[in-house]
Length: 204
Image (cartoon, rainbow, N blue to C red; front, side):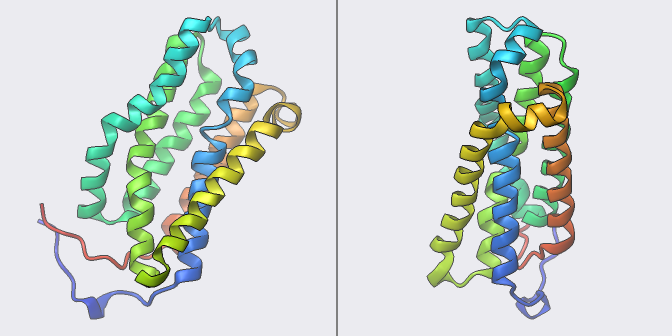
């Protein structure tokens, strides 16, 4: 059973830092790590033999992973707190993202996408829970909106620049996946160090 703490034992609220950290998690984990695949899919398809039909399987594996993991992710956040859960899940997502570089065929790519989607099922419920502890209720919707804006902007930038810039700089799509995984690891470390839980864990 998780130990409960008094409200007075909680660290001080840091709304600006919490919003910035949530935005970074959304931008790098979702906007970059997820949205890197579609613009590079022609290269992946050529090298890994991904047919049109298998392209649907590969892309559908990520939301399937989210669907399977989300109920467990939400329960884990309630029990262990958003800081630990999101940091751990982000590391898993980073490894899944980078592992795409090691894929040898469509099924291994689909497996990496499934694992990547599973990490989202743990990170997504962590972010609003973390923000709720730092941001006043009157500005909670705005804080969530900023985090979502970061995700959408990063998605747009990734889709536009993944092929002509990132893949070119990284020496191809495999290098781009590794760089995105490294970026996710960096953000996971930043979240683990800088985020402070200010919601009371609940026994299950």
